[in-house]
Structures are given as structure tokens and as C-alpha cells.
Length: 236
Image (cartoon, rainbow, N blue to C red; front, side, top):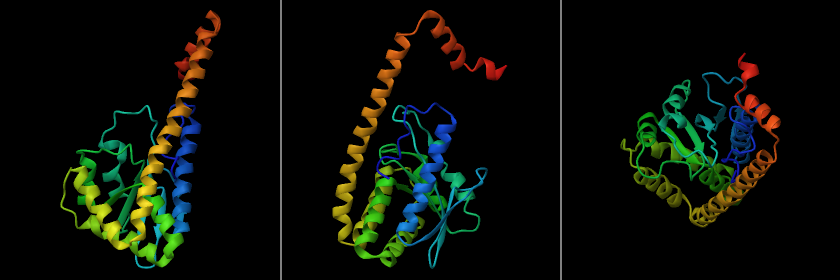
């Protein structure tokens, strides 16, 4: 969960590997919910539906994940699909979108206004890791209640684009629900920083190898790679 938010640079854009990676994050999300005692399934259909459905004793929700490459810096609110998540509820009261903590807007964004207006919980892998670890310490019933309280808190937010306001309310709610959470949250924030360093080194190593491979090519090999890169044969 600490590492899955970063798509490896070794996977080509829009490739089968990249699509499988997206499915992998869905499966990881599914396993996380099962680990805390919820019933969860990964939906096989990919069009116009959430990827994961989750069922607790007194509530249910749909969930989805977002992952990005570290090199992907220019993101907008459409990348996070908050409004789409609302449509994908299909009668369920809640929806949750889980993304890397360092990839979410930190100042002002429409995604927070959309989340509070449409009752969609924008969550991070770090927050979810805290919830999973809490379930190991305090049990699954308390964890199920905590997730429900977070959803109810989102539904009472005043619509605002302010990221600080959104996360202040979410974090404060989590911290007031149990004394155990403060320590877990400190550890997961540190782990999030360390995971970026790991992903960065992996990406830079791959790009350095790619640069070396290109520089060692002959003229003919370079031309063939250029034709392949532009997918001329497939487009023809």
C-alpha cells in the first residue's frame, strides 16, 4: 500500500502492463478492506462502473484507486474522477477514492469541493494503511465504525476547494476516534516520504539505462526504434 501509488516508469504509457498495474491496485484495495473485516469484491467490468464494491454491516460503498507516475506533474480535477465516483454509487450512500498522498492537490482544488458536495471520500493510501494497522490493534468492529464515521464527516463538510480545510477535518476526526491513531499516522507519514525516495531511485535508474541503450544504438537501430515509438505499423 505504501508503494503502489507510483506507476513504474518501465511500463509504457497506455500499455497492457500499465492497465494490469491499475487492476493490481484495485485488488490491493479489495484485500485491504477484507483485512479490516469488510466484505469486498473487485468488479470485472471496466466501463462506467467503480472497480471495487464494499459491504459493512450497516453501510456499503464503492471504491476506486488512482496511481500516477512520479514524472506526471500536471494533473487536473478530471484525473481524480470524483464526480464520476458519485455516479457510480448505484444507490449506495458513499464512495471512496484512494490516491497517493503526495499526488493530491495540497492547496486548492475542485476535487475537495466535489467530494464534500457529492459525498465522496477522498482518501490516501497512507490513511488506509493507518486503518488497516488499527484493525490489527483494536479489532475489526471498531475499524468498521471508524470508516463509517469518516464517511459521515465528509457528508457534513461545507463545500470548499480548500485542501487544508478538508484534510484538517478528516485527520481530526480520525485522531479523536482513538488514541492509537496518532502514533500510526506519524509512522505512515514518514513511510510515505520514504516510498517516494524508493520510487524516485527506481525511476531514475530505469531512465539512465534507457538513455544508455539509446546512445549505444547504431543509426539503423535508432531509425527502427523511432518507427516503433510512433507505432507507424499499428496505425497503418
